[in-house]
Length: 142
Image (cartoon, rainbow, N blue to C red; front, top):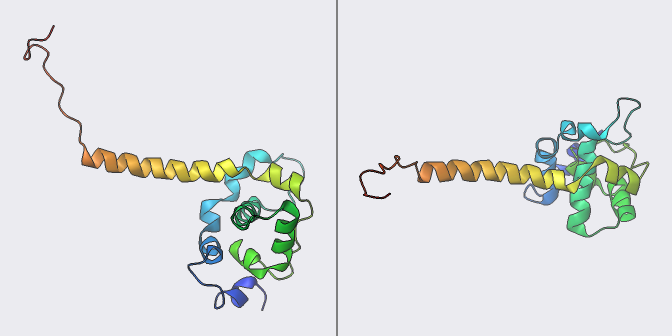
């Protein structure tokens, strides 16, 4: 076994948060969404998609930063949720500073809200087509 996917796919329920994130993490929080948080010099230590998944799980499970780092390091479900990472992928080198710098919770929320707003606008437009403009001279209004 070289990844958590081969180990967890039969053990983690598909409808659990870990299964959902495993399938959707790259769509929900692609690295490009966080590109402006990085400088052109050097290399980031933790890909932003992984940080975003860890922050979601941290919030859902009520963990401190240290607990979240430990769970990512030792709980295979967390690595599975982050895209099916290898068993030997090291945990976070930096904790609070790196997580705060790399991921903004509001970005995930904003993306979901934007998608929902577009969907709602399409539904609204389909349900209520625009009415023709009224003729001001027809009603006697001045």
